[in-house]
Amino acid sequence: QVQLVESGGRLVQAGGSLRLSCAASGRTLSDYYVGWFRQVPGKEREFVATISANGVSTYYADSVKGRFAISRDNVKNIAYLQMNSLKPEDTAVYYCAGNGGSAYFTSKYEYDYTHWGQGTQVTVSS
Image 1 (tube, rainbow, N blue to C red):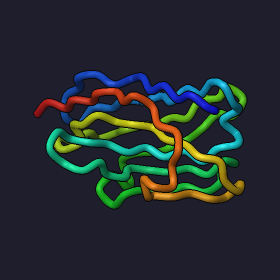
Image 2: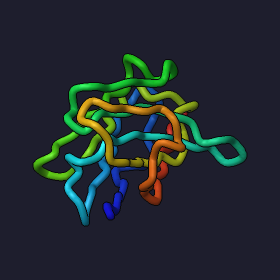
Image 3: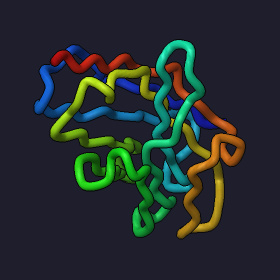
């Protein structure tokens, strides 16, 4: 079983940048595709970005396309979410998630993920 731990969330001003990290332990992250999701209290969790196990395939929600970038370092067992040009509406708890799959597989659906981190809070002030 892989354990995922997010970090990097904090308070930032609108227009600023943050990089979130998702550190894996217990299994090598290279066996897993990874997704980032976010949730605001009272709302459903929503998809943000996903990356395949080999790092070749990525996919983004329209709301973050061009501003966020997902990446991974399979040697360090860490996945990242680089967030630029942040907006107040990006404020949420951000979760990373993973599951085993073929090298190029990605998914924007929560039900495709079996392992979840505890989340990290990102707050963007206006």
